[in-house]
Length: 211
Image 1 (cartoon, one colour):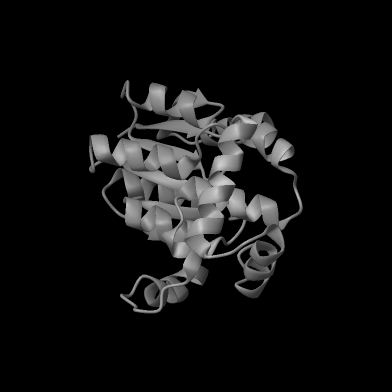
Image 2 (cartoon, rainbow, N blue to C red):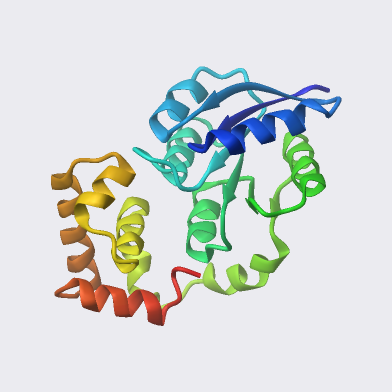
C-alpha cells in the first residue's frame, strides 16, 4: 500500500526537509503541499490523499480551523497535527475536533514515519508526554479555565498579546486586518472577563499557556 500524504506548513525549509525524508521511504509519497491554512483547505477538499500533516500554527487560517472544516466534511479523514511545542491547549482542541494524531516537530523521524503508517491503517497516536495530562483536561469539569471558552483564533491572539506583540504585528503575522484583530481582542477580553492586556498577560503566565 502506497500512502499518499499532504503537507501543510508555512515554513518552506520544513516542508522541503520532510518531503526529502518521506521520499526515502518505499511506501509514503507526498502528493500535495500548502503554505497556509486557506490554501490547505482548498487543496485538501480536492481529495487524493490518505494522511494529511497539518501545522498547528499557520497564517490566514490555522491548522485547527482547517482540521475542523475538513472533519466536518468527512470525519473519516486521517489528519496528523504537528506542533513546535507541547501545547496542551492546542492538543486538547485538536483531539476534540477529531484529529487522528498529534505530534511535536522535534520528534524522531522514525516515529513520524511510524505514526503516518499507523494513521493510514486506521490507528491513532498522541505523544505519551501529553497523554496523562490530556486525560484529566478532557474530563468533564465544572471549573473549566476561562480560556477554554475561546475559539482557536482567539486563543492565538491571546498568546500573541501575551508575548508583547502589537495588534499591528499580530495582524501581519496572522495575515488578517488590524480591525479583525481588534475585534478578536475585544472578544477575548469579554469572554475572559478582563479589562486590559496586563490582565491577559498575567493570566497566560499563571496558566503557563506559552510553555
